[in-house]
Image (cartoon, rainbow, N blue to C red; front, side, top):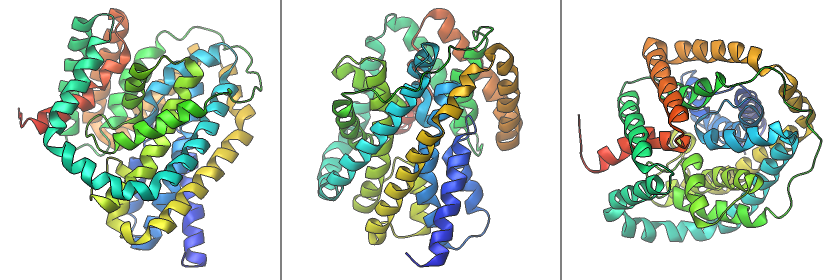
Length: 388
């Protein structure tokens, strides 16, 4: 590191990332884009990004579990996390996520240098068939649902909305998309009264296997466009083996961390990154020439964030004691306000439509993971050269 200035940049990035992750629905890419516009020198911005990203990743699980308001990386964590909160096991859910993140970071680091040699040949072999791989995964995703025809309709409708949103020029199209589909749509069903008192329970045992599965899937996620979000990949993981709620949380959190770590490897080895933070980072510094430093800073920030989140676990658990039927008004107002500030009136239009789609999925009894067509369909259209 470059002495005191790098240390200051690291601390600033960590603080901004951790606090930003506590704000429901606020994506790390949005924060990074704001920082990039403030005129920091390239090295300082790079150090801030690599410390901000893991800190935000860790702290964003807190609102996902206790509020049910996700950002792109934690969408599917909402459902199992909320189930555990309703059983008084919210702290256990958070502890499971934090331990899984730590384990997957260690496993990913152990595999990091071999991955630099593995990614190029695997990517070259898969690239000509990527569109068919993605199409096949999408078909399997739909066929495994209880009502494939209804799932396909929701998948297609969300895909159309996703296509126009992603091509709208909005600074953060994911904010209204996911906040509407997964948060706003579910708020109407929040019952009056608070969740049970949250017990201070340790992380679930036996999650090492699921952390390893998450690392393997995170590795693959950095190769396949369109289905690279941890939320989507966690859904595919359930096809490999049955998972209870803690195992599912362990898997999705491990995918998040491993994908982030391996995105540094793909950026350095094949010049591709499926992770927005790494793409921003590549514009600030030569990732390949600074791999050791970047990996060390990433792990340090993640470890600090996990420790801090665990220390704050009981304070986070108090969120569950709030009356959610009253809280939904505050959260809805917050989501509308932040959408208007970041994405303007087009964002509000997307928020309204995505909320309707989310409610449609709930009314039809369709798994809300099919709403991830908002990302998959536009990617398929791009790969198959379909333009509207």
